[in-house]
Image 1 (tube, rainbow, N blue to C red):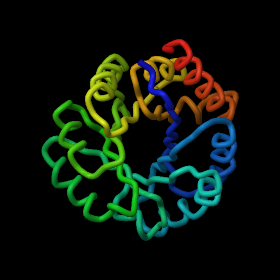
Image 2: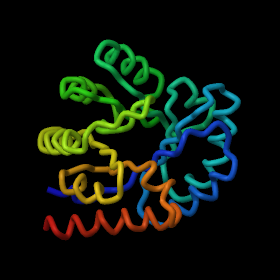
Image 3: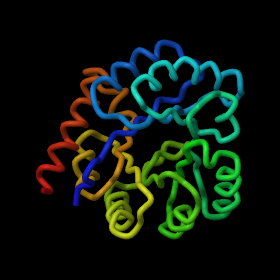
Image 4: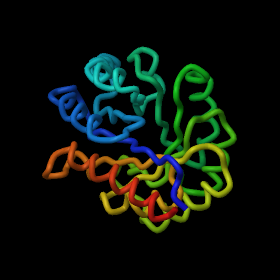
Length: 216
């Protein structure tokens, strides 16, 4: 069943400096209902993080879009709205516990790279804002879509913590919306679209709306 108000969640390409990306992001955000932007930091130093976040906040803030980064330690010093943490079974509780202590309740905290249902359930017991299924690993691995659909359907039926589902392609937006995702995350499907990011986000928004109509 489609989530009643599924929204978009954009992941940036890896950024080592702002460059001209702010213009592309602005076009994307103005083309559809985007709730959140996750900035993927290619450079992990504080100076670079601050430079990137401060270039993008003037785009996200006026539009009411949350800006997250993939580094808990740099959130407060960069001015980001929160963090997305990648978790693994062996260190999940330690990593997530430390992140909660540092960020909550003032910042947003999401948990991703959840390869097992048990990991997702343990994450959901912490003070987090969402769990994410299917997000790409640092080495580029993306779980099969069928697995992500199954996880989203399972999660949305049982748990109250919102879930994000990664769509490798635009057609996958329909499938994941109907599975019950609260947010659909997109990366290459937006930034690599030959028509430009605005066209990709506009199409994704239409797919979400149509999936909801079909489910109803």
